[in-house]
Length: 170
Image 1 (spheres, rainbow, N blue to C red):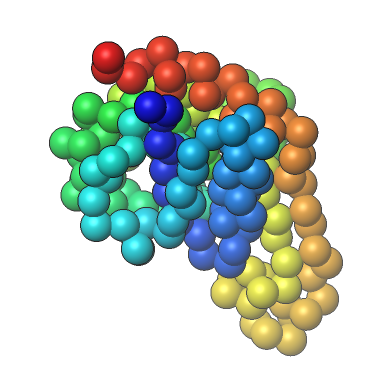
Image 2 (cartoon, rainbow, N blue to C red):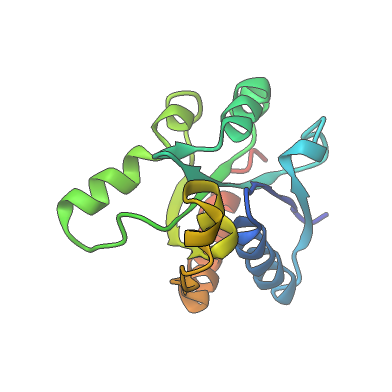
């Protein structure tokens, strides 16, 4: 019997869902059995042997519902291997300060569980997201900035599968 994967995500404007879809597509193209669900729709992790868990970043940390989900399911996450992915639009540089800041986005989650792998993906920022931060008239002047690198997401997914499967109890 094969491994059943769950891709669980929290998104604010849909960008993290699109990244989760890319992860799901990569797994499915490798013949993996995959479910993709919003954390809002998950009540149990029963039946899954490995999990990809991701969240958008808001004000420098994972979305509150994602952190709460991890707290609620912490016991399960301590028995099922999990790979974290964080989708953000800030701190995209290769310098040490940017890397440290990116790493801090998931500190609250990492304090609760021990992921076997982790990735940080640059996301997308558009007028819809800008309207949350700026006056509406000013938000309409904001161009769409899409920094997602689909090849990087696919490559990481393939690498993470190997790590996840090596941590599945026999």
